[in-house]
Image (cartoon, rainbow, N blue to C red):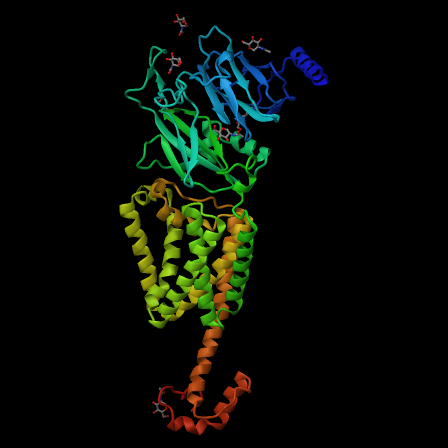
Length: 561
Ligand SMILES: *[C@@H]1O[C@H](CO)[C@@H](O)[C@H](O)[C@H]1NC(C)=O
Ligand SMILES: *[C@@H]1O[C@H](CO)[C@@H](O)[C@H](O)[C@H]1NC(C)=O
Ligand SMILES: *[C@@H]1O[C@H](CO)[C@@H](O)[C@H](O)[C@H]1NC(C)=O
Ligand SMILES: *[C@@H]1O[C@H](CO)[C@@H](O)[C@H](O)[C@H]1NC(C)=O
Ligand SMILES: *[C@@H]1O[C@H](CO)[C@@H](O)[C@H](O)[C@H]1NC(C)=O
Ligand SMILES: *[C@@H]1O[C@H](CO)[C@@H](O)[C@H](O)[C@H]1NC(C)=O
Ligand SMILES: *[C@@H]1O[C@H](CO)[C@@H](O)[C@H](O)[C@H]1NC(C)=O
């Protein structure tokens, strides 16, 4: 009873000063709105192609009438949008249709309707409703267009609502699929739409949020930066169309990194924007664990193990090359097997671990075999694969047409891989160091990467997706490259360079020493002497012997003879 009275009072106050929002560029906020209340939005002084934005907050299970008034006469239509944070709402042309599935209402979290405003006598009104037990945090947006602007979704053939300025997004198989309907132009008589000889061009854009940022404020800020055509072009990355339908884009999913997808229809000098659509590629509110890459203790323990082994490899890998080799093959095999097992289907954890362990054992055997047969070429292949993966992931956008075809992609991938491997074979000594250095530090990086949820792990994961998911070739893969990734890349480079210097020095010194030692092999110099002293003694006391026992090395200059 108390609640009813409270709601009534609140509704009353809202009725009394019916929230007439003054048009502003900036977002305005209004108090939580209770059931059956209406807001009136005046578009007086509003320019075409500008976005009107207002944050609204609705009580649980409430309705809202939205009425638009004072539309300037040069505005022919508006796109009215509702962006909700995580929860769904229904928007409808008719109040009676709010509770039904129909072709005049829409359910979702990035929804909106096309409203004709020119020469219209009835009130310009839409109805909003939501059935969530929580307050609904939403952003109300109105973008206005003049007579020449293309009508987004005006030539809709597939979606339910006749003019469909919204987009549809679904996630499957680690892919995000975004569908849009073609735009139309008004014919010269101002009534019918031109669809057969459609002259409108469409371009799609994408914008990433900071990784693992699930706050409503970031969400709404990002949506606000993708509403008008100028903002979309300025803030988004254009995504080329592939072999699939020109109105569909397929993206690789980066779990836990939010992304906004926008579309722009252009005809001549005039363009209009579709309603942007959004996904985190997981549900942070309903199922928070889906947004965590590391969601169980076991995976965290494995990650810690990888981190420790990575550090060990970096620090002492060059001293115990054999142990380093076994460890890194073991880890590589294990990670690869485990990821494959997790990626291909949902076995239980025990099965995944078993597959990982089997793959680790196989990798160790294989690496021992490779080392025994001195196949340096095969030994350089992993580095070749890594290079090819990086090239695939960060290839420029125009290469997408090429990469999309399996017939072009795999030959290119394999030849790049082989080229790198062959080049390295030519300098096998350096290659060995590079392989050890790069992979040793990659373990450190990938472990940190899993903890922080950044995106360097996708260097390998994307290739696995490409191999295991048949449709994945159509996906646009360019991953987000944000501050965490930049930091990790810098750490990786520093680790590589540092290791290179340490190992290079160590190897060089060792080689000098071994040369001298082989020359000294007849003598019984004990290694009790520090190296420099040993050299000194060798030179001092055994010099005469060099003259006679010097089959390999020439010490003329070294020893100033
Ligand atoms: C609205 O924003 C745009 C760009 O953000 C700016 O050029 C324009 O002057 C602003 N208009 C008003 C009324 O503040
Ligand atoms: C909402 O719209 C309906 C139908 O047009 C109308 O009956 C009702 O009075 C409106 N409510 C408000 C608060 O404007
Ligand atoms: C919103 O609707 C979509 C599609 O119907 C559904 O998958 C999702 O779980 C819904 N979200 C919530 C919070 O109910
Ligand atoms: C406005 O609408 C009326 C009736 O629907 C129609 O007769 C008239 O031609 C329209 N005017 C314009 C400028 O479209
Ligand atoms: C919408 O649905 C109604 C009845 O369900 C039908 O008569 C009408 O033709 C439909 N309109 C469109 C554009 O599909
Ligand atoms: C586009 O704009 C330019 C200059 O703003 C003008 O010269 C050109 O005629 C316009 N084109 C069309 C198709 O309106
Ligand atoms: C080393 O010294 C010997 C005799 O002093 C000389 O014949 C020989 O050419 C020298 N070798 C080199 C590579 O300088």
